[in-house]
Image 1 (cartoon, rainbow, N blue to C red):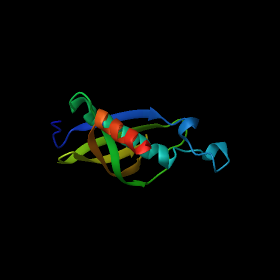
Image 2 (cartoon, rainbow, N blue to C red; image 1 turned 135 degrees about the vertical axis):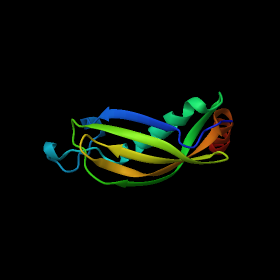
Image 3 (tube, one colour; image 1 turned 90 degrees about the vertical axis):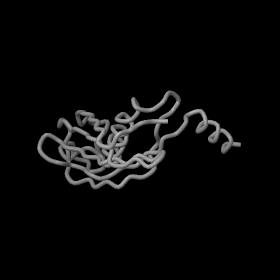
Length: 130
């Protein structure tokens, strides 16, 4: 299925744009990276970190998120997302995740993903749909 060493690391860098920023504060100058986008990008970084280590036909899906959003990252600022494998238990892979903008840490926590056989997963979903 996979050989995923503890300590495997990945990184993703992106620019905060209006597409990933909150809109509810109203003022253009108050728009920052939204919490759901930050978490989603942390998850994507974890997935991309281990995907090359998986056998063909396998992928991962998120199963647990425990993340704190610590600070705001304004539109126009670069954010770096990092993921590090801290535990592997069968099909479960746990990561330490972090997000930093150009000035400070903006998010941190843990995320767990399950390794799945994509074809079997699709079959189960089709059965669920009836």
